[in-house]
Amino acid sequence: MVKAVRKDAVHLCGLIVSSDKEFFDKLNADETRLFFAEAAAYLTEFVGKENVISAMAHMDEKTPHMHFLHVPMTPDGRLSANSIYTRASLKKLQTELPGYLQSRGFNIQRGVEQKPGSAKKHLDTREFKQQKEALAGLRSEADAVAHEALLLIGEMAERRKQEEVLQERLQSMEQQAREAEAILSDMPELPQASLLNYKSVLKQA
Image (cartoon, rainbow, N blue to C red; front, side, top):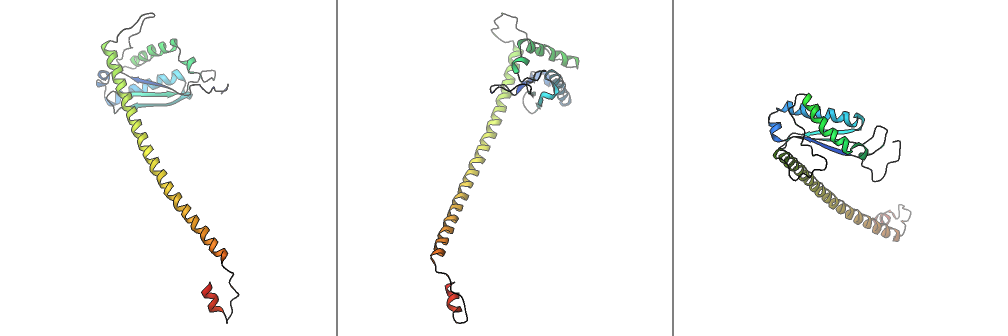
């Protein structure tokens, strides 16, 4: 880093690449994987290969989509999401990515662009379906993460319970050891054993 990182700096940015169900219904599994691979290639070029964390496609849900994660590092070495994602750069991304995918043979359209100053009161059918499907996918992922978190909490609680039982056993053993040491310290020392007293010394021992 060329500069100190602010405490409130954004360390990770995530982009979601998807389309509506009708688009993916026209693609087979290999074509769908190629679609996300081409999208990841464009986004890698957009943010810089060295800044990419992961590009993971979710194929087992109602609408396939890809999560693309990266560190928001500027070309001059600053951690600044605000410098990377400006209104102009977002507009460029939303225009160029569909164009790039079209050049790779995919029949995908750019979302409807809102004109400056216009108040968009409703979404058209295609946009509404896209957003509804994306929201359903995110909710499904959130439910899965929450379920995993609950399982992890349960495991931690069980482990904590086991640790408490072991701790109690350890304390009991330590108490027994202290009591044994106290008894031994109060006992008189054994006399030197000989042929004459070995029976009594053995019994005392």
